[in-house]
Amino acid sequence: MREKRTSSGFLLKQRAFLKLYMITMTEQERLYGLRLLDVLRDEFRPFGFKPNHSEVYKALHDLIEDGVLKQVKRKKEGMKLQEVVYYTFTNEGEEKAKLYKKQLKVELERCEAMIQKAIRDNFGSK
Image (cartoon, rainbow, N blue to C red; front, side):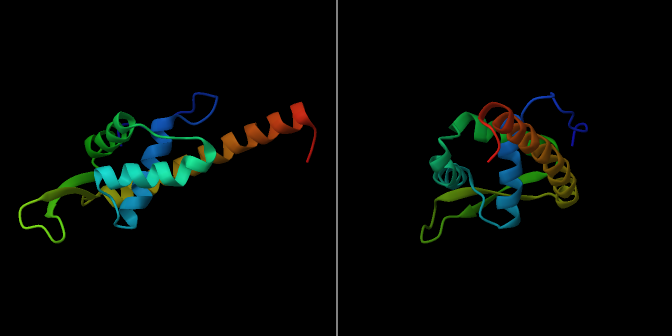
């Protein structure tokens, strides 16, 4: 990837969060543009988070530029002519993805600790 992610000192940025999920969905082989957007919206609806189309595609393009993912066109099931663009790992993409996920785990744990501190400090312990 371009460079090691450095913390802004506050919470995780939306695009980093989306890239983490895109990597995991690629590992699960269920990644194509519009389906990805639908899955993310469904999974995060209970939390009030609705990722928008442009942020999802910007995150995908970042992963492509970073050499993690590549686009592969496949025929849509049951259709003779319609193609769907899927995303898969590049040759070195899986290693880059593992490193990114490892870095994001550390960042998410830091964010979680900050949120827990804010809850304790402002609402008492639970």
